Length: 113
Length: 116
Image (cartoon, rainbow over all chains, first blue to last red; front, side, top):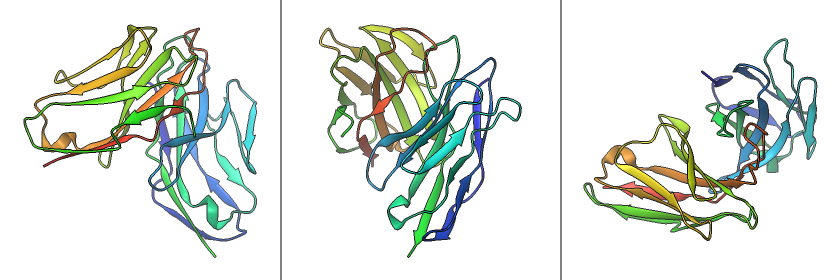
């Protein structure tokens, strides 16, 4: 079946540090890939997406590239701010079927001033 | 603001009871999805409706049911509630005019259900 794996555990880093959150997936065909962010007490917001191999999604300084060969969609940001503290979820929507999302477990990111 | 609204924001009830969660999708969106977020299971897809018809079912218990009305709002009904049903329930909507299109889903703020 379709599944998403995110690296274990929270991520704590200092302001202006480089952020990477790993995401790998298992799916047939060419799923669409997403990163959603959840700020404390709020719903999920779409951060970026990519719908085909080698596409790069980007938004608010965050980037992720759809790598079919490694089935990955790692999230990166060059210089994080305290306001980036949130939970980040990687998700996929399978190709050719319904649009239901399969989510990874999420990563809590804490940015310290 | 995603444009998706959910009511109520919080719900506290007792085991064995029945509750109804309500969702209004973004204007123009035909698909509504329900997800459950819990500490142990993470975010899980429950069910999808498209223009009033059930389109896909995920890990939804038989005690749970949903429907989408002609005005496209949706309700999720949870009955015979158990302690383990305590969770955040999210509704999302998308255009989804074509299956497998990778449409962006826009999420509501969620309903936090606490079963005592």
